[in-house]
Length: 438
Ligand SMILES: Cc1cc2nc3c(=O)[nH]c(=O)nc-3n(C[C@H](O)[C@H](O)[C@H](O)COP(=O)(O)OP(=O)(O)OC[C@H]3O[C@@H](n4cnc5c(N)ncnc54)[C@H](O)[C@@H]3O)c2cc1C
Image (cartoon, rainbow, N blue to C red; front, side, top):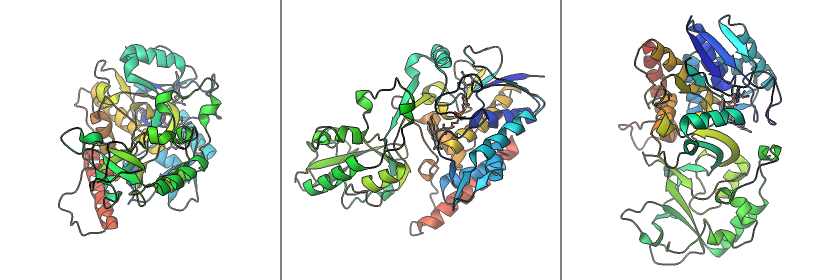
């Protein structure tokens, strides 16, 4: 029986194990937790949800809701477990985390061609096809081994992410396009101007806003480095600090020539020009607080946040440079990556990449071309984003409609709900077609 090694029995590793065991492979699944837990892990079970117990929206109008439906059709173990362990949470799929992880663990343990090794992988056996799914908390020894494989420069250890909003939700009656000092031929940045009063209001809310419970504090050696200072941390150094940093108004006069007291800049984040990140706004505020405080920025009152800022110790690789669309390492065809380590963000997103990597390692071993769903699906759009993002400034991405291929012939006068329903319907039809190919 052909052997496959999978490193990490988290969300992605368990999805991949389930898929490949059912295809008849001998899966050797390695998990370190029983012998050495990270401070944020509390259980010995597989697929531990280390923070929130929510897999977010179940609504098909929401991209992550449609992603779940795609995964249901792809026979996802994680979605089965979540539905088994579901607790009431409005339109979200929230779970009893113990029940959820126990379900996944017992399903994996019951597969007779799965061999479980409770050990830390410190060396990769390149003679055996391998999926690396060791997640954001990859152990230090494995980090060193991976750095040897892909190079130090393409293995990131820290994730300081600024929020991203959709372009269409920015109020361009208030915001305007301009590059600082009008440098460059095109006007790349969207600028949100502030008066002194607006700045003061924003500043006071920012410095008093509620912080996310910092799992960074669990790590006694952790210190922010200057380039990744959270915006609220910078603000707390003094009322004017931001005016000399990310909110510097110089060179950004309004189109009518008047000056601003402060300016927040947003930079294009995707090739399609549908998403913008708020420059310098990496933050550790709670997500609801981010929505509340950042909506005080003129022009962002109704901003739709497709990703909130996060500050967490994380490991992810430079996927756009290192991987092909099957999540296979370009310079070592026996190695595949899955999960958050590829640069997707979130439980559901990490899980689906386990399926994508698994179906492709199966195809690779059968001598077939590697395949991924098209960007008309949410799963495919995520893969294409990760693989085609700018490798010089690669940052993790969550499921959202902004990365999915546009529907060109949709009537512009139709409301958002009808548009999202059309995107969702097309994604589901497309994934059904894709499933016929695998
Ligand atoms: C502190 C923290 C909080 C988060 N909160 C949220 C949240 O609220 N919502 C959300 O959607 N996402 C959250 N995330 C992101 C979340 O971790 C991922 O979405 C998801 O768990 C990643 O899945 P994964 O399969 O890639 O990794 P994991 O689920 O972390 O699985 C990787 C597994 O590999 C094991 N492993 C690591 N190194 C080795 C080794 N050398 N040998 C053997 N096994 C190894 C680990 O013990 C772990 O079990 C959070 C991440 C962190 C770090």
